[in-house]
Amino acid sequence: MANINPDFAIELKKYGSVNFNACYNCGTCTAVCSLSTEEDSFPREMVRYSVLGLEDEIQASLKPWLCYYCGECSESCPRTANPGELMMALRRYLTAKYDWTGLSGLLYKSLPMSIIAFIVTAIAVIYYSFYESFNVEKIMHFGHLFEMISIAAVFSIILVPNIIRMWWMTVLKQKAKVPFTAYFKSIWDLIVHMFTQKRARDCDDNEFRWLEHLVLVIGYLSLLFTTVVLDWFGTDNLFIIILGYIESAIVFIVTVDFVSSRIKQKKEIAKFSQPSDWFFVIWLFLLGFTAFVVRVFIDLNLIETNLWMYLIHLTVLVQWALLIVPFGKWTHFLYRSFAMYFDKLLKEPVKA
Ligand code: SF4
Ligand code: SF4
Image 1 (cartoon, rainbow, N blue to C red):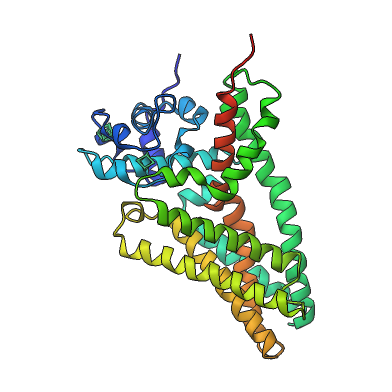
Image 2 (image 1 turned 120 degrees about the vertical axis):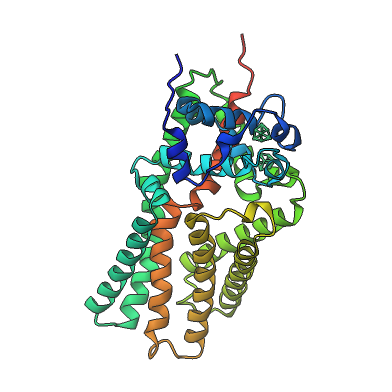
């Protein structure tokens, strides 16, 4: 028998969906969704599950990740139940369920806790700088080391176990029969989806948004590579220096457009921003912008006398790496890619 949570609406409200109970099950949203198929039909089914409080079914479903939030369904809903925003709220809810630490749920549901976490990390950076007597060389060396250690630690301690939990909830627990070879055969799809998010192109009126995302992903990942592996702040190599300038400029220019779109609220998808959405775009902007300015300060020999600039960048970096990447909206990039992979596995035919 299905488990019903009568308080699910209250729970989901904390993740950002408020009006889905107005749904009268007409099916218009599913009919207009260009990503919904006979095999993977949404968002109406997810709205029904949410109205009924069928948490187990929601946790087992990959459908919230198959939605790319074009907003078409919300614009067409005769009851303004906002199914597009519900799908977004379900993604936040699922992120919290996959996360073994429980911190994603805590930060998604509580703005004061998020603010406290940001303040604590900022204080930790200032305390460390004080401990090092504001020595520029030592602090910048630490910053570079921190990037490498935090990437390895966040992936191995938080993100990999969370993806295993997602796999358990959506594939193993459902007792789905997946041929062992399918795990290898579908790896290429996982990589392609991860780096291109190509399914978003099929979302109505979404070509430009998809392109912007693609440019941002390439800019962000290559900036990460340039700072961590090529040591952008420490190098004298002109090619690497220019490369880092271009990458960081791409990151902050694209994110300016994202922020302005959320402020203007013209598009359906920008109308209901949650704090986690703001943190994501603003911190990504700050990451690119402060990295750019730090390198300008290094090139003008100003960094020795203006350590404060590097400390701002380091604070943004620490908050990004320890809060937004493991527990915030950044994880959607990873979970969505794995959802595509698991969905493909579940559709692989089993030999009789
Ligand atoms: S269009 Fe609106 S009312 Fe109709 S099923 Fe979808 S959410 Fe419900
Ligand atoms: S937001 Fe777009 S992709 Fe998502 S369910 Fe609605 S119509 Fe489909």
